[in-house]
Amino acid sequence: MATVIGMATFVLVAVVVNAVLLGRLNSQIDSRLQQQLSVVQRVAKGGDVGAKGLDGLSKDDDRDDVPIYVWRVGEGGGAHALASDSPRLPATRWSAGLQTEKVGRSTFRISAVRYQSGWLVAGESLADVARVESSLFDVEFSAGGVLLVLMYLAAFVVGMRALAPVAMARRRQAEFTSDASHELRTPLSVIEAEVDLALSRPRDAESYRATIRRVGDEGRRLHRIVEDLLWLARSDETRLVPDTNETCDLGEVAATAESRFEPLASRNGVSLEFVRPAVATTVRANAESIDRLVGVLVDNACKFAGPGGRVSVMVCVVAHRLVLTIDDSGPGIALEERGVIFDRFHRTDSSGGGTGLGLAIADAIINSTHAHCVVGESSLGGARFEISWRYLS
Image (cartoon, rainbow, N blue to C red; front, side, top):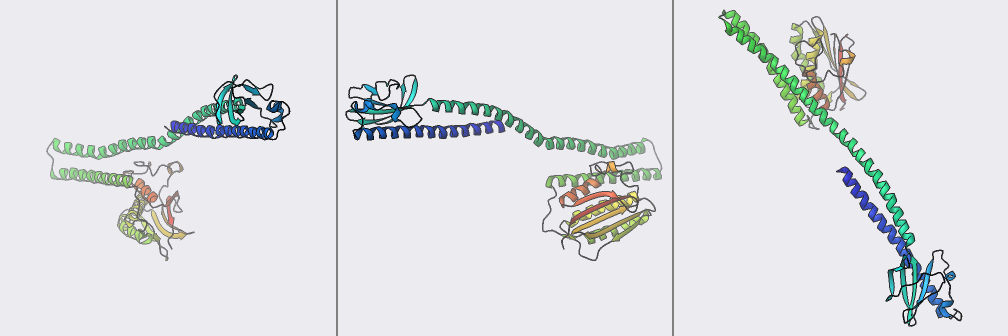
């Protein structure tokens, strides 16, 4: 379609250019013919034409390089040329003005004016105009062919590049569906197996309680997966476009998350510390989204730090940027893993029993709030997540 539209535009432009250029050439011929007839008429009125009258004039009196022929047509229609090499003028009914006639083997542009009882007729061959028209057609035909090929190739390349994200999105959707099905099937299979085993033969009350606890654990795991999937689905649908006028205090949100995770960290033997600057830490983002982001990162840090480990959460202002830094003393993230840790359902070897959706949710929030994220090595020996926003002073 792009090629067809481009070629139609090219043809339209070519037609307009041809019409303008050929029209100008014809207009110049008409002007020369009328000027030539004016010269002949002035000479005739001055009586300076010799004994033979107008027949005494020759083609040499045309001082233009373009060959313009002049004929005197008598009352009876006989034509007498002013130059000996003039082509023979056909017998026709003349009228004042401009017209196109076949003279000999060529097409001429003719201008006629009244003279005595007959006519003065001036003509110029249109052969040069035809040559120009033919040259234009040849150039346009060649250029049109090249342009057609180039436009098709360009449209093809642009089309393939435009379709690439669509193909990638479909591929990622298929992978996401496959991974989600696998993640959901695992707890369902465990629940089914536990129930079948419990019902296979009579058991004591403690055995049933243990089975119900395991079923409850898998049910909660299944609930977390479903909640995360629903959150990501909503984020994909709405693109998490935040209200540009909505702001929150990053320091307060981080402090709330720290207090929420303190009991969990203490129970796991993890030392959790929080550093907040004295200045305002306002960021243009939704408080709920920032709380979810901090919660995901702190939860991951506490899990990977392990018993006896340390986790540091710090909010500071660096070079007009508001920075949230989360360090842990865990095993860290290998360099080759850093580019894929935000992929959905991606888990490292030391991920434990996570769903692989937490960092995908964090990445969606980072992108929606126009933040910048750097994953690196922590001074505590583990991983560092550094997220920064434009500082609203």
